[in-house]
Image (cartoon, helix red, strand yellow):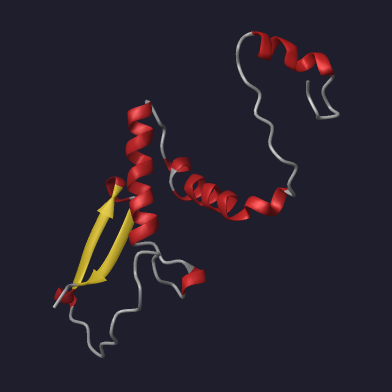
Length: 119
């Protein structure tokens, strides 16, 4: 039997008779999961909208690479423009030579990252 007023009591009968179990969510305000919605929006706009995904394996690869970029390299405004994996900002340096900058890319150059070479 369904608790939602949009559906009649008969709505869940075929589902339950097939052996499937109906899991009901608690009623929560839609903005309760805003951090998840924002993550999904970033994933879609920054990555998935730029590809034609052809298989599940391709989707998994693209998602894995973007997730690594998101957590290790991409700056987050809420963390003072640091990636989540970085505990504190790097030490200040007055002069940076061109050879001190290391470039890396993911997903064929879609995701770019620059950082200082380790001492």
